[in-house]
Amino acid sequence: MNIDFKEIRLDEYGLCIVRPGQIHYNIKGKNVAGWLLRIDGTSMSDDCSKMLEDILLQTNTYTIPEGVRDDCISIIKMLDKCLANVSDFPLKNKIASSLLNTFLNYMVSITPSMFRMDYHK
Image 1 (cartoon, rainbow, N blue to C red):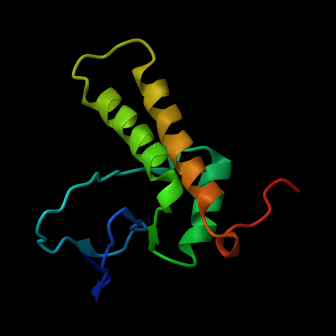
Image 2: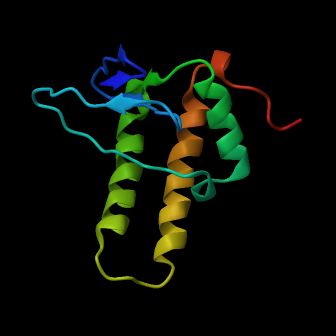
């Protein structure tokens, strides 16, 4: 993938975040599988948005640690299943938003401490 004309390589279980306004495009790869989440600021909590913003000041890519990969994949699969459901069902948007915030908060909580700030002051 290229972001702002720089090649970004993702490892297996890599997470790449593209900020609004960044120029980005995919480069063809072999045996690539994953999810693309397009998130606007209204989809996440203010705390989560602030934490994510602080992490993004440091990096665009992050490899999900081995011990939590299954948890992350489970959350994303639930979100995917919820959003893929063609028919609307009661609270669909709230459930999707909740799963998204759960994933983002989980990702923020497992990032190296050098990326985290103390948000509970």
